[in-house]
Length: 234
Image (tube, rainbow, N blue to C red; front, side):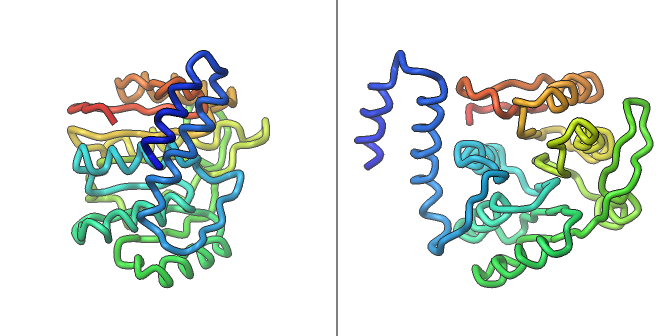
């Protein structure tokens, strides 16, 4: 199947970027199929398969141990499933979300798939976040402090909190500020929704704050990846 798709992919040379990205997501889904053997609802707000594949590649290739997600969801399940499949019992995902009802749904899937031991789910309501950039709400820092005072973060995935309206377009900015002192010598950051101006401005701010460069991958301009330290191709 993969060989056939690779041949088909070559036939897309000269086609539009959207067509090529669509095929890349199909091949990513096939790769991900080996991790979860039950149906998982994949909504329009979830990370796309090609991005999840890059995240998993980065975890294995760069030996990421402590993963933090801002916004929990289908990526949580795939990362935990990767840990389970490879018996990576010392690794952990810290999955932050403001929506208690959604957290309960996520936890039901984690239980069903026997993945709960790999995930620390954190319910953190949104509150005003003090900064010099703009007014915004982010996860309650007094709640997060209980979990991250002594944690070295190897990978940060930012797909929350919601930022789909003009009034909340900078709501993901605090992640780079709050976690700045938790990053290790080698780490990666994945930021989704780069088709929006808010995330584009956030990327520039983070680049200045953290001293790292953010790049698109494989011509897909819907997300960026930033890395510090050792960098292999993912």
